[in-house]
Amino acid sequence: MTGYGVGTTVFGTLPFSRDNESEADHYGLILMAIAGYNPDESVPFWERMASLGGGSIEFLSTHPSDTTRIRQLQQWIPEAKNKAREFGRSF
Image (cartoon, rainbow, N blue to C red; front, top):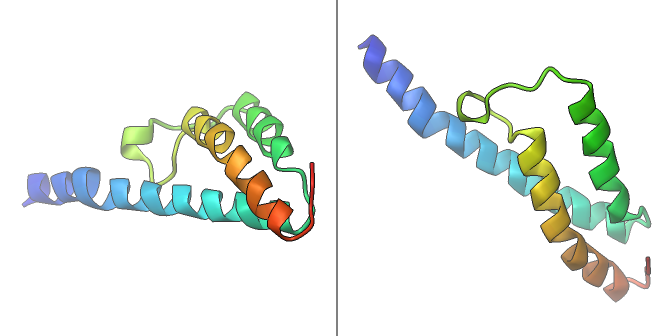
């Protein structure tokens, strides 16, 4: 039963939680751009967070690693800027 519980958590619950966190980052980036905040600033923010240490192994975490977050944000920034332009914002 212990093995089942650990397996369910590591291979079931944790990846789902990381996906939810990534989705929240994605929508948050779009919303911040629409609100007038420069989405380019999200990358340096997470670089500063990463420099503070304390990160855990992504495989065993409910959150994406700082490296994954930075990579994803870099991919999403153009989309956020395009969406913000629809609301009259430009960066």
